[in-house]
Length: 182
Ligand code: HEC
Image 1 (cartoon, rainbow, N blue to C red):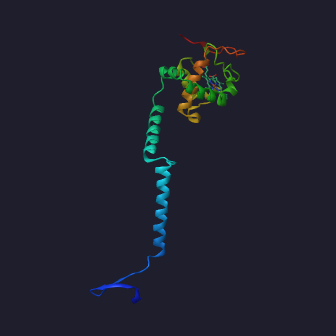
Image 2 (tube, rainbow, N blue to C red; image 1 turned 30 degrees about the vertical axis):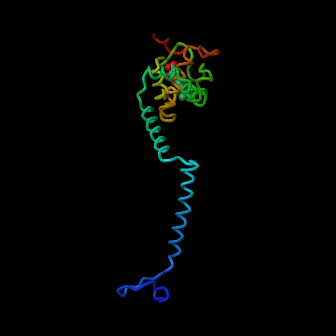
């Protein structure tokens, strides 16, 4: 600071020095410039990363999906799901992965009852099936699935069961329970 050769001007006894900018400061300056070029290229030219609008759209979709997940289940909703190929696909996968071991790959029954005949221990209405799947019959060896699978997959697998209903899969276990009341 006291190096007179670097004094740029003096005014009212105040010296203006012509110091070199500190290296840490220059480092931040140049890094920011390089970063900003990269950022601009990545997000605005190449559009390789999601922009603010994309992120906003993704969040909105996520919120809408969560709202849909929370719509209360009903007979009508489950019957509608049973017409939806995407739900049935996912329901079938859930069934093969979690239920087939006890209910057979076709739902024909094994340790658990036949799900393809006309008889039901706990009722064959969509909401009755949904309730058994969600809450289980733990004392009789049917696990409760809502907590493990989540609401969405319980709905999907219930919808899938509605399509198995009455298919009377070959080699099925003998009927248990009462015929479903129309
Ligand atoms: C550990 C074996 C086991 C697994 C795994 C299992 N269940 Fe069951 N399930 C049973 C048994 C046992 C019953 C009979 C309960 C009773 O006697 O009340 C049953 C009953 C049911 C019923 C009621 C049938 C009726 O006649 O009312 C439905 C519906 C059902 N299970 C669906 C499922 C679905 C869907 C899954 C997979 C997400 C599944 N189960 C996984 C053993 C199992």
